Length: 78
Image 1 (spheres, rainbow, N blue to C red):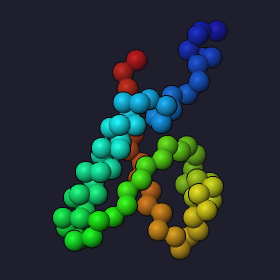
Image 2: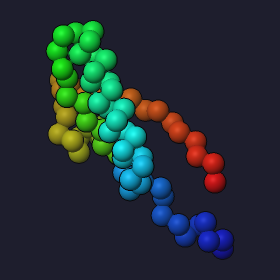
Image 3: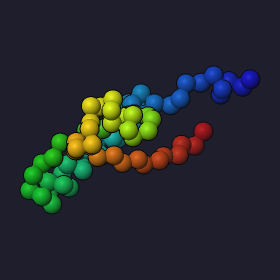
Image 4: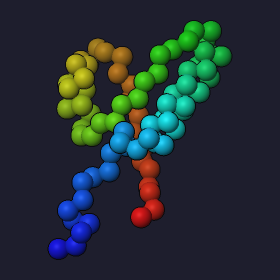
């Protein structure tokens, strides 16, 4: 077996530079939405995995909630 088979999956919220990038992106999104709507939204990010129904249920979000789901795949070079 190779050593790659024993590695834990990468977690986006475990890397400080990724957390900083996503936090800055969230702040920028807040500013853009505020400029278009004259209301400042609250934008938060959270690293999750799994299918949408399971993730939504874990977050306590029912079908009538304001949960916005966006999946953006990233490919990292080894």
